Amino acid sequence: MVLVRGPLLYRLTLWAVVTAAYSGNVTERCMQDTKAFLWELHQDSPSPYAALMYDAFGKIGSDVKGGNTNRPGSLQECLSVQGPSFSGQYCQVFLKQLNQVSETDDNHREDSEENSWVYSCLQAFSIQRSSQGVLSWTGTRASYSSLNGVRILSLLWIICGHTIQLSAWNNLDNDKRWKETVDRNPLYVFAFSGPVYLAVDTFLLLGGLLSAKSLLGSIQKSDDKLSICLVVSYLFKRFKRVQPLHLFIICLAIGFFSVVHRGTFWFIAEDEILNCKKYWWSNLLLVNNLLTITDICAPWTWYLSLDFQFYATTPLLVYLYRLNKGLLVAIAAVLLVLSSVTSAVLTAFLHLPVHQPTTLAYKSYFQYYYNKPYTRYGPYLIGILSGIFMTTKKNNLIRLQWQAALGWFTSLSVMAVLVGLAYVLREVPAQASAPHALYQGLHRPLWALTVAWIVLACEEGYGGFVDRLLSLSLWVPLSNISFACYLIHPILIIIYNGKQETPIHYTDINFFYLFIGHTALTLVVGYVLTVLVEKPYLFLKGKNTKYQN
Image 1 (tube, rainbow, N blue to C red):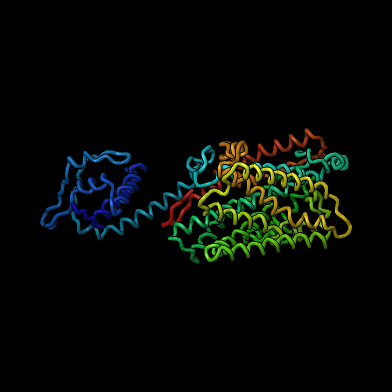
Image 2 (cartoon, helix red, strand yellow; image 1 turned 90 degrees about the vertical axis):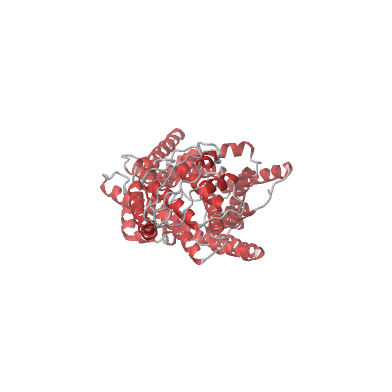
């Protein structure tokens, strides 16, 4: 039998199902089965069930104008169909005034699309819908499961660091005793948080890895073409993903700090109000990291600007990868060396500390080094290269147990050395110091390489208990609200510190409870912001686009 597949049957079938779907009469399962059937019809060798279904269809005959509109098809064939997840059911559709179908089809589709877009806008602000999936314990198969654990552990480290820094900068009543006790001891994690800046480098690595993975996926869906339109769409999607909640937080900070009754240590909040009213535009354009640290509105948001600036370089590096892999390696090596050398030279000539200071005694550290793209690009670049490799690799990099053991030993050893040297080199020398400059130039890319190894080992089945820890289902819902948590937690800390009537007294247990309290409140408020602000905006879509979570 020769199977002839006409476009009219395809259009009528799809039009009927889509129309019914808009009216709420077709389930998602039915829609998927219909799409699968139509897809099979377009194959060179359709599945037997699809061919049988097509044969059972009532075909349009001749003399429709004379009234020949009822084509019943084959009842027995229809009932004998056994699809992948359904069985055939027989029904008849009486075709009336066929000449109007072609005339009204486009108008009906436009009306349906218009109604669907308005309905989706209203649905976007439904709390019931926006809260769905936020607390899900199941991650997406397309992502690397270990990243959730890495992301949340890094976020907790940052919250811990900000809890300590924002308190130690202004209102400790036993500041000298605190420094003598914890300043040089890496065991005081909650009382000082160690080199917390490494957690930011971890975020930069993850950002680069996921940006490359996302762009390569978009290229694959676009017939393997990297076009200007695709790059513009890629950047715009990132901009609209970040900015709604970011700008909401800026407005929230200005409004909340303005109406809350000031406390004894409210001067930080007052500075935030002035800076945000004057330099809000830098947050809107995602360039606030280029300003002086004392002029930044919501200083912790410098990371979003830095991340977007690095994100914009991903298309160029992916283009180089597709053009010539050797050229990509050469340019990436040059960029990595330039970033490291710049950091080392600035440290030597400006006498910068290698351990992030807990006071504003070293303003040049923040003004010229800490949040600038020319000193922080190394981890993001390594993330991009890791994302390209992990997305395009054909075989596993790790094939033998001894390779995995050597990799784990090396990565954990490098991590320990980097953390330890941060304490060894804590004192800022009066003259240019080669060890300080060398550490400043190398510690960020080295840390990024060790984290990249951990992710790779976990994904290739050599993670052991570390993979089981980082891939716990517990991290999935926390990861879903991590962006909101990062943006809101400094506001909560500033409010707590600013409302104190007396300076905070340092003890180990006090700082531990501060960290636990700030974290718990951050998770609650982060969930609320995710459901009420972040998710609704993501659900909003254009008339011809479909939201993908």
